Image: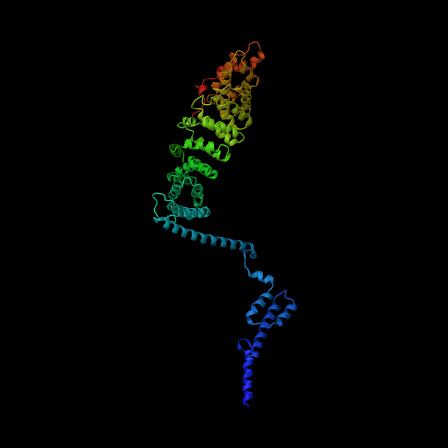
Length: 525
């Protein structure tokens, strides 16, 4: 009996040993049946699960550690896809909101990291053993390239830290307050640009930062008076020195040149004479002319440079421009950009200002045929016709003017602009000059101009615009010359030259208004 009990006890131990974890077989079977029931219920609730799969799941007798695998197998691909929430699975409005929130979060986190980096860079730069200026500077520039267009706070703090890293003088070793003035911000940027005048990246980002300061943020909503104050603040901050240095030293960077020259042009336009005088004091004439020579074939940069050059052409700078070869440079630019209307207008306008200095400054420049070609190319452009007539008279004093071509262009200008006082006046002045320079026994100029209808156009202009200053005096000279030199043997020609009674009355009625034809150019400073 005792042996049977011992045997029974041994059998019980063996039975428990056969079960994982030492559990009785009966209890283990109950667990397995519950797992199978759970799996079966999942399969029944999940669409797309076939009956044969359910049968296989019912026959499973797996431990609980493998239960998750069977559940994943039972869940359909569609349901697994819905578990991964993304902006694509949301309605359009919420999808956009999701993207904006993600972008905002990334931006603010990046900004936070960048500002912390600036603090550390500033602290390191104040140490005497700071020896990694290039690496830190390049890191700051890389982040400024991305951030400064989007956040004025980062722009201010980034350039302040950069000024400390590159060793700008008279800078406190701390970042500025969150809000600072435009003049202070511009002064920091200008100091960094001047300190690193040979660094193209700093010059480029500096110009972009200045543009953000004066045009971005809340300042873009200001009135014109406030915008003018902004430009005055830039000038007071010493921006002009930084810009001229960039134009002088970064000669190979087209973007830098274009931005710097554009800023100089805007400063001249918005601030006026103080900027002109400051630029001239810094050698602006030589700097701009040198840049024009370098970018002579680049229409975009040259156009902006010529705008600045035109603004610099004043009473006090004309001789300096001529001495630095401005006439030769502008003459060459006509050859390259004769098809660019805006550049042609600027060139002719600048030459017109320079022509006031002397009547012989165009000698040897072969300017007469170039101007005649421009007059023919732009017959309906008032600016080209006006300046063309002025310059043709000036250039014709040192170089011969082809009579037939000149007479053709004069008649065309009269017909195209019958009510434009400036074109009419200088066209009449050119006719009088042609009559003087081609005065010979055959009266070649008088005959040609009369046959082309030029004298009739002069008479018509005087009848309709007798109040134009100087026009009556020039017309009186022309018609008097025509009357005195009329061929008496040819009555038809006499009538064409102004021999009729009406023309005689017109000549006698014209009063000299003290105009001196040889000094017809207005001095516009």
